[in-house]
Image (cartoon, rainbow, N blue to C red; front, side):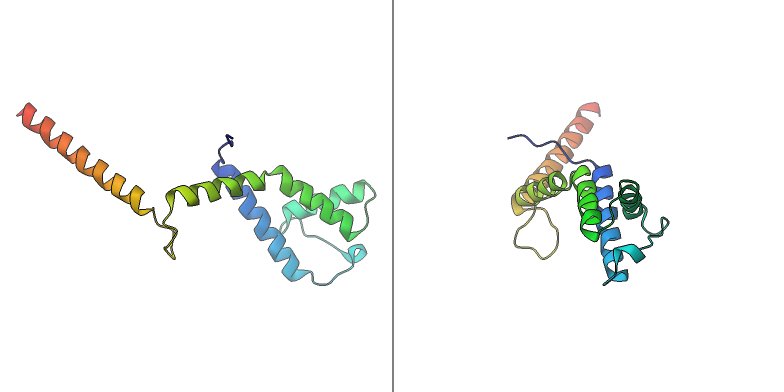
Length: 128
């Protein structure tokens, strides 16, 4: 199976959206949908969903949540996470507490660096 690569724009969109949802949750616990006012400056993505819901006659928190989740699906969050998971499994040191290259990948990069230095020095000798 081939999976389309995640691009930086998608990752940034997911991070912004999840941060906005988290901040919204912290500020609005518990609340009534009818009293809900969402500042477009602070919550541009959620306020768009709220406006769409109001225009469509949606007036419950459940319906707002469905609209927000549809937006989440539209930014391809699963593919972004699958890409990150694939890179982590294939390239990262699974035993490290920090994000580090796997030992095999680290060794390959070191060998490639030594090879580049050897080729550079060999071509330098030929030019002299």
